[in-house]
Amino acid sequence: MTSSARGGERVHDLKGEAGIQSFVATLELSWAQSQRVAAALAGAGEDARDELAQLAQVWARAEKGGVIPSRLVLSGHSGGSSLWGEERGFKNGVLSRDNIAQLAAALPRAAAGIEDLCVAACYNGGQTSVEAWRAIFPQVRTVWAYHGSAPGAASGSTAHLARWEKATRGEVNALQADAARGLRKGENLAVWSRRDGYQTATVSANLDELRTRYASGQRVFERSFSGAEAVRDAQRGPLREHYNTLQALLGRPEVSASERARLERARDQTLRVLFYGNVAEQFQRTHRTSLQRGFAALGWSAPDFSRLGRGEALSVIESFEAELSRRQPPPLEARRLLPLLTEGLRDLRRERVPENWL
Image 1 (tube, rainbow, N blue to C red):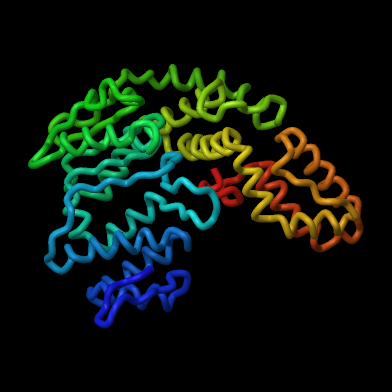
Image 2 (image 1 turned 120 degrees about the vertical axis):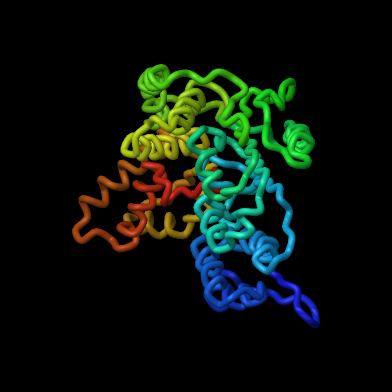
């Protein structure tokens, strides 16, 4: 991360506390407010701190009486609660809504200065998601988001953003849900405005219908999760429809906190099954050395999981776990590898499979 200073630019290593503190000092805020900004940066993943710091540079002007843009566009890939960029891997950071909320809380004048918000990312337009974004920016007048998938950079996002830009010029208190009519994925638009509240471009199914769809889609998920049926198209097909149903349920405010927690886990796991090919590729690349050491500890050659289908990979993991349980004492490197295999590649837990692998 760089900042301008007398004599030129200064580079700050945001991976450590010292770099974060040297950066926040350049914002020229009070000590207490600087520490709140520092905490927000430290709470983000290392590879997302530069993006958050750039936002802090702009927003800090408002805290000192300056002017900042009143319209904000957040763009990227998303599963509904965070955003990340196009290139897969750890060098592409994941910026969560909570990260943005923490920075906004540290810089409240800036947050209050946002009047028009566009979240150009998939699955951020459910009613609960829109309410969460509104809570971050308390003076927002309009919100533009997508309750389904959003158009990508190569498939129409610029046309959508042009319409958003035109619709939010000046003192605007209303947006219409048909604002993207005729554009690709315009049917997925959801808007909120002070005058008209929350609207979607299409009529949503009721809660009972969504729960029925979810129950019937579980068989599709289970077959894909077990590897019995391969996912041939991550963007279309029965599993994608099941994922859409999960997202629609999570967008409904009537869903209880306990049910929401369960659905969020199901959403995260389903997304990773949809993009299992990407997951396996990144898993192999990230854990290559651990794989070689762990399998060698059992006297086996390590497989290349990026070349195995999900069913084949699960079979290998089952054999590895069974062989390890037979060894007394169990080899250290094999024991270290087991959680990566079971919690990561088998169970597809969010903690082991980050979103920027997808």
